[in-house]
Amino acid sequence: MENRLSDRDFFLREDVVQISKDLLGMHLVTYFDGIRTIGRIVEVEAYRGPDDKACHAYNNRRTPRTEVMYQQGGTAYIYFCYGIHHLFNIVTAPAEKAHAVLIRALEPVENIETMLARRGMERLQPRLTAGPGALSQALGIKTDWSGIDLLHPDSPIWLEKPEQFAHEAIAASPRIGVESAGFAATWPWRFFYQNNRWVTKSPFNKQGVNIF
Image 1 (tube, rainbow, N blue to C red):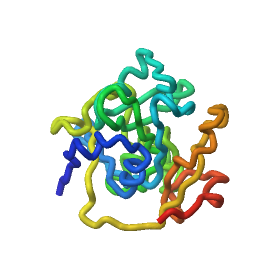
Image 2 (image 1 turned 30 degrees about the horizontal axis):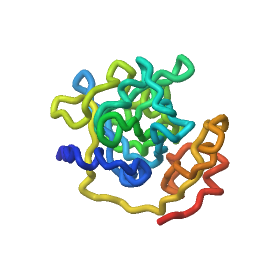
Image 3 (image 1 turned 180 degrees about the vertical axis):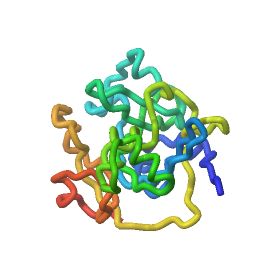
Image 4 (image 1 turned 120 degrees about the horizontal axis):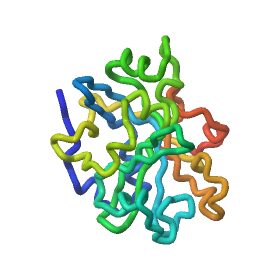
């Protein structure tokens, strides 16, 4: 049964790090062209507007691409990376704060056959949805949907709280691919289920600190 997350206050909190942790275990759902796909969130990264050098909105930077980040929490921020990948983020905090959570990996839940077809794969492997570009392709998410309100009842992308909420050990590590972010590069703002096979492969996985 559909159980859309409709609590705006969940996304309007100003602690993007806490929201990132709270998103673990939730379902990311898409419904495109009559096809529904679902993945369970198992890895995320937090980015915090003005003072986070790894964030697109560092130092209150505003561009046509990042303007979406200044909308209210619960908005989708999807950007094109390396001319190949569509990376899905959820804007958090009140408008003008420019905080966001990058969804980095999913555990497939529903309509795996469609996910495989979208990824050009024949058998189920972690690379199906491990990695932000891979999961967006598997769920059919593209930059066309950047700026939509994920809480709107007609949104084709939304979050659900699963009826059976499995609890796993959560670990924290530095974020991936932000080595040039200076002082922010070592912030432990990547959160993931420590022993989940669908998490992105990274040297940080073994170094991650168990926080729950």
